[in-house]
Length: 268
Image (cartoon, rainbow, N blue to C red; front, side):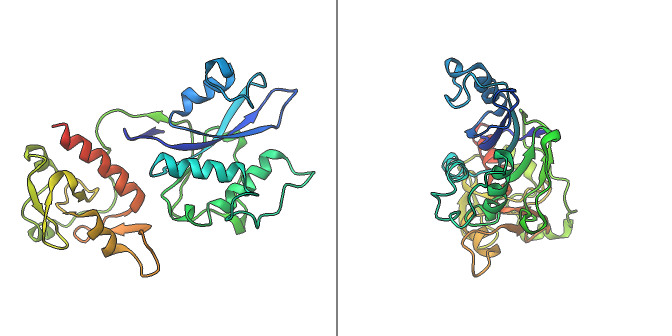
């Protein structure tokens, strides 16, 4: 499965298939899974970790991605590696003598995805090697907004993929006249002032956040959009609905897609 052309941050789980070390695991962070697994299997001279060097071959069986930045991913990596030191995970029972390292890692992961701050992120759980995939326990399933998918990670160059989500009512375009469709952005200067569709104040085109529906004219300040959709008990929304076309999208996905759109506009 291809990923949009945006910075990738992932935390992965390796599984050793070497007969001598079979069953050992390793947790790491990467921005390029395909390159990273090659480094692990080639050893420290090629950039691999000392814990995996000369113990291969290794399989990258699982990766969690969709983190908003590298700091967020690195904190997730550290907590997964050191659950006994993380204040959010200290309550988890320690590894049993009879428990396999792989099963223990998945048990920790199951809990991590259901506690703050991670349970609010638009993360994707990807089984790169389907033969190692295991179902999460009934009482330990990830939040419903985190998809579980299968297959390798591949980079996709080019523009943002269009959303195939809900239909758009053309009657709603009368609410916002400055940009009738997303295609009109190509002819606008990045410094052109637009009107926020929520607070009605001006906003530079390069700083606006847009609906992912490419035939929708909605744009706004990112803070205005967050305040519109956030619950009283939240700081950042999990999911938002476009006020114009009612397209629903995870907040993290919306921000990531708008980073791509902003970069595209500024390159015009």
